[in-house]
Amino acid sequence: MMQSKRDRFKSLPDVEWLPPYFLTPRTAPGGIHLKKVVFLGYTDMAAAGSRALFGLNMGKEYEAVDIRGLEAVEMVCHRSEPEEATERKLEPVQILHCKYEEFTLLIFNCLIPAIVCHHVADKIFSLCKESKVEKLVILTTQKILQLDEFDDDVMPIYENTFNSDPVSKHLPFPKDTKIVDPFLSSVIQMMQFEDLPCHIFTCPGHKAVPGPANDYDGSLQAIDQFHAVLKKWSRLHFNETFSKSLTYRDPGSGSELMYM
Image 1 (cartoon, rainbow, N blue to C red):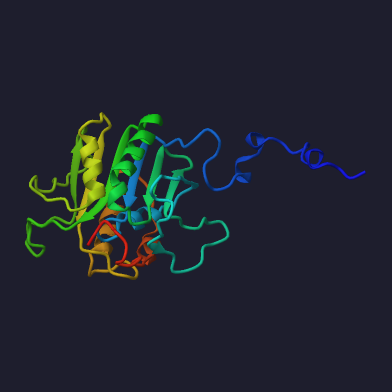
Image 2: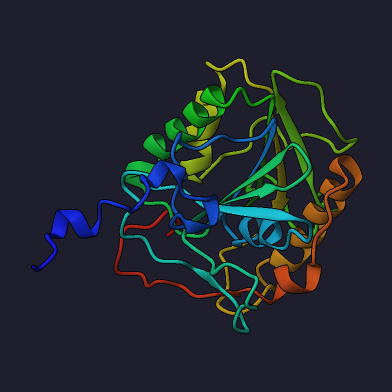
């Protein structure tokens, strides 16, 4: 007698009892849980924050998160060489959890459409609140319009804080700095209403140039600065060569992007 379809699958265990490695690289049952300190890198002006964090060179666990409005976005930074068998492919939105330390790296390897910036920022703060995150650290590059880039007063990196004391000796960028980054503007706006201690490390930069990190858009210098600050403060280790080798590809000027 032919076995029914129901009988054939009767012996399979329920998905919640399967070991973690059996699950797809989305999210394990129970939802996403971030660790105590979250580092956020995204496709900023020079695409440096995301590339800096992708270089994490410590024991890590991968996770991906689906965010409404980012379902169809494309990756903008790609490996220059195929990944090793033990490595995970890069994704447009990816989470790296340090395996033994209380750090989570949240990376947006995509251009966040201006129309969904507020929603994405809200999702980040919701995840932080649900996970009882104690500190949020953001890496970004911005064109600081108030300063001449060749002026001696221009610092290689700035630190601005909200609900917290600085963790470095770097000065904050000028108070009258005009932010032309819709995503960062949305994040800063939400910081005003949250109790979460936040730190923003900003390096001067220009619109990302296609290819690996370089001097022209400031991404090379920014990655160096981000790694130096994070190593000194958090003891995180990074593969600088890998971060700088990640290749930026402009998805095209036909879509509504963050930067014009």
